[in-house]
Length: 384
Image 1 (cartoon, rainbow, N blue to C red):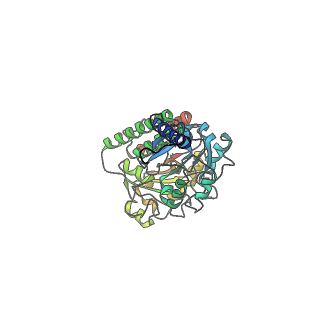
Image 2 (image 1 turned 120 degrees about the vertical axis):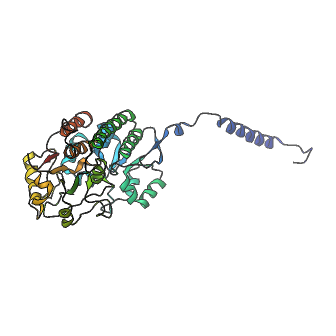
Image 3 (image 1 turned 180 degrees about the vertical axis):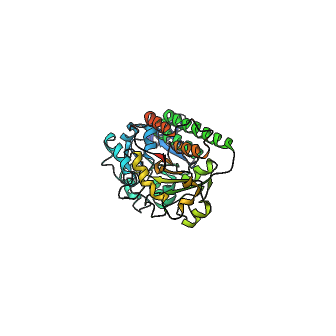
């Protein structure tokens, strides 16, 4: 504007408004954060990712480790769950799912977002539920790159947990992350410290036992003795537990990936000193080795016995010594898998673990952290 030019009343009003707005905006920078921003916080998940979540997520989709979720959040945590991956619980472990269904009113009709293994998982299913938080295991995160990108692009944060890695560090990190996200950090810390204390004690005593590494083999007993089931290399699940306990895993180097069968002749050539058969309460699997809440010991042993009659197995060191065992498959990749590790350690290193009772430890975990009573058969030797 040239010097000496006059300003009419309308122009002066516009300038006053602009100056007032600038002052208001400048002052706003000095004010506390807006309530919406103050209601979020950052949680570090099992992958080390920084995930911004609401102070109290009210609509949560969870895709695995439902018993861990229950232990951390209690039954009240389920009041905020609006979607789940149903097949990994209802389909894979229906007898256990049926125990929780009466305790969680929303469980029977809980919307299903699908599973990556079956190709049924879809971002659209998740987004339609309008969650403010999604939680998924690392294996699902890795398998659903496109879908997870679409979900996050819709403004839905994804927190990743990882119990499948079967490491102390991932178990503890996953537990703390779920607890922080769901507003239960104290209960999560109690569980994390309990797990760490128990596992470190088991590993320390195993390490001190010395001696040669026991040759060990585990096979999934879903199809029965006539089917060679999956085994697990040292990098994950049961194979990782073997590794932690100082056992020699005969599947090492024989499996490309996280699981798969190894040839029958490889088992015979390796002559394992300990054999564990993964068992559960699967439906539609009449020849499976059976364990679980409703299974008595005699049923477990009867379903395990055919393995001792496999061709060539009678001469194996494990069979001759009575070291053939049924092990509930659901005892790995959980917050109570230290009980399975304790059972195995007791067989590998009987001296340091002579006074330990893994079943009693599992029962105590149920009493303290789970809403279902403990019963049935979860781990036992073929011979009494």
